[in-house]
Length: 173
Image 1 (tube, rainbow, N blue to C red):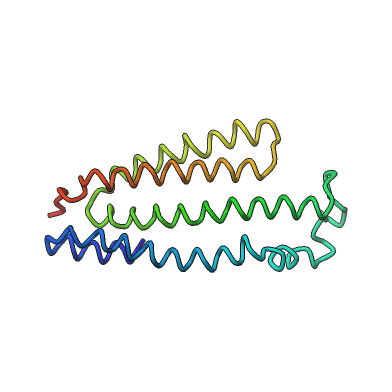
Image 2 (image 1 turned 90 degrees about the vertical axis):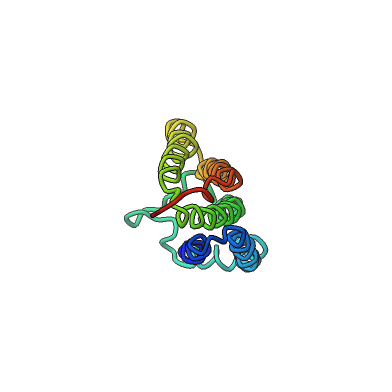
């Protein structure tokens, strides 16, 4: 985000908004490289990461007492792999959103980001997690699914604002 802010701010200040799209494209290239390496850790070979946390005999203990909630280690690992798979896409979408946020911030479209960010967080993440995970005592995987939906919707909102081009007409001085 900070790199996008600096570069986009320079191009906007030079009255070259057509170059701002190149920043977004370059960000996506960098993100693709990041996604490749992240996918190796979270999707392709998640077992070393997962097993690292299960090395301690206290992994399932709370105050010295074994806490399993009826789930054995292999079932836990399946849930963790599912969560890591979902979180991979969440992380990628959030990085896309932050790159676009940087461009919109550089252009001075910060009020939209404030309102859209706050409302989307409450409407698409916090309230649904409370209603569909916390109250019915659902699994953490359901919370991750809701977070992924939030990431999809909030990224779509921010990308829609970028495509509208209103950021090109903002004046900061």
